Length: 212
Image (cartoon, rainbow, N blue to C red; front, side, top):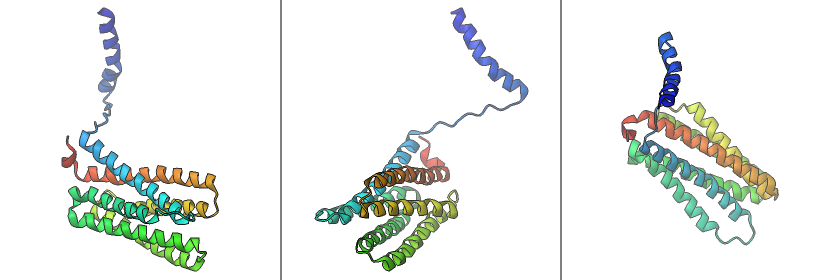
């Protein structure tokens, strides 16, 4: 018992020293269950966005693949799910707008896959410009809805996502499977960072919705 008391007093000494010197001891805020649930589910949705985009590339570039239509339908549904995830905070109209922008992102990506597969370099270049303009639109929408999200920061995150999808497609077309694995892994790692940036900003903007 005495040993436990002595250990307890020793553990308190550093805190007392800081208090006596006027140095504040920072305490990390605890995460609530609702915050963890939202951030984990939001992260999962974006990971699925990357993985099903990659699956679509596989289907679209593999001769004889019969699941391209089904994979595309599932991928588009994923965009609806991402839009639905923000509706409790920004409303139905905002959720629908994000879904619309993300579906455009997927449709353009699909057109790029087809053009690249058919060796239509000029068309790929034009579609890429359209793809990046769409990314600008997504960044503008999200930053406009949440002051904690900066437009330029979001554009950088979205542009990197586009680059990694392009790496995935390029590696698939030349059958460089090692490079493709790297592109997919990097794509997942990056999308987690992007998803967390957005979800953390939502929690910061609406703290009352994440109290429990």
